[in-house]
Length: 311
Image (cartoon, rainbow, N blue to C red; front, side):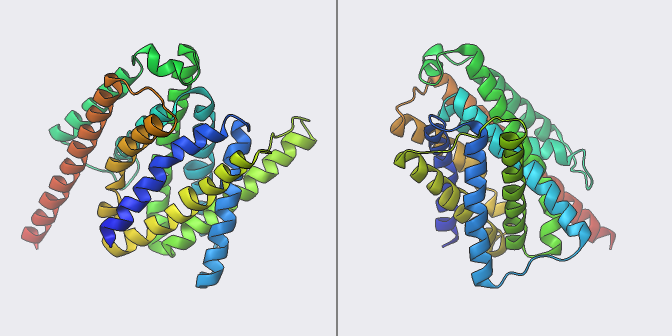
């Protein structure tokens, strides 16, 4: 059952890039991100009400939820929507493979700090090489997305920024999950994100007189509903349940599955070109993730053994 849940979450998140790319043909980047967030927030709040999950109490908790909504949801959702306008879903999926590496780099700076080893450095170096190589993918892969090398690179940078934002959100949420129910964390942070994005859209429309373009075709409306309910709301709910049942380490295995699933979906569904360079870049990033993760487990095991010996 746990493996089924892991595969289910990975398939949902891996297919998100195709949906983002599809919806980006009709709506603006901000409207895409806002609609996704509002739908997900409404779905999760309904689910929380049915389950009897009460809102958290305390100013410090809500302050952290506010930070999580900004760093871990609004920023990556907007950046992914921007990237969806500029580059292929294949490149979006690839860049998400860098999120675990970005998480580790940040965790080495933000207390409690992670230790580094030679294997860690090797993993980070391989991941960096993979990202660098991806920017030199054959032009045929780019033509299917925007037709412009400069716009494609900008889109890749936006997707990479989204991966870094997800990493920051993971660090913000690690303490929250220890204080309140993990499902409450994702539900009420998503609701905060939805409220903030709607308020910003109102400001943009009324004060700046720049209308937010909303979907009007049936295909785009359905795409945004699926993206919000299934790929965001249900995926987050199953993911946090998986953390509760199997632990964060097992749930984190989705980081190995989402990028290749996203690349394959982009090639099959949108007929985007997948060059050998993309596969090479993806392989280097995933190997880097495996090395970094392995080094973490070795270091923690060694520290645990040392502490037991000391006692």
